[in-house]
Amino acid sequence: MSFSLTKVLTQMRRMTITLAFGVLMVAAGTAFAQNPPTQQPPPTQGAKPTTPPPAIQPPPGAQTPQTPATPPKLPAPVPFPADAKVAYVNLQEVVNTSKSGKSGLDDMKALNDKLVAAVNAKQKDVQAIQDKINAQRTVASDATLSGWAKDLDRGQRELEFMRQDAQVQLDQKQQDLLNTFQAKVLPIVEAIRNEKGLWVIFQIGVDNSPIIAAHAGLDLTAEVIKRLDSAK
Image (cartoon, rainbow, N blue to C red):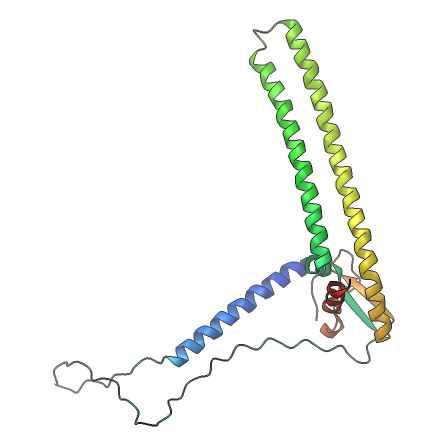
């Protein structure tokens, strides 16, 4: 199994779309098989067109063949090779799919939305002062304009501080979530490595991953997500 590390998530989304489209095509094919078009006999040469006779009904007790509407079979997961000594985990997929990962992403988004709203509100106040100065520059007194200019300068400095502080808060929140996530995931990964007697478990789904091709059965991502979600 080979893949491009920079397009892992995009390929996974495309695979999902392709699978969904395949299911629809199978369902449509089954429907057509269950309802075949009624065939009419060819017209007799020289005869006048008449209303086609009704379809011939099977004799009583006869069985009408029907195509069973069986659901499409999904490909079975590739078993882990018994003699394998290495494996890999897509940590980005663990973050995006596991309960702990999605909870952390939700917390990050909530903080980001809160900080963005505060910065935008301050930006609006600063812009209001600037608009007032521009609109009344020719009619307001020098003292009034000077006071407004001081308010504008103070507001701009406060806005710049809010932006820098917001970035610091986001960086700290991200680091805290990363530390918490690693504290949960790494022991699980180590436990799996020990159980399977592996030499090493590689990390994929991030930049500069050392793996460019691997056996599909070596992917332990689903097992890590399962254990992480079930852990208390």
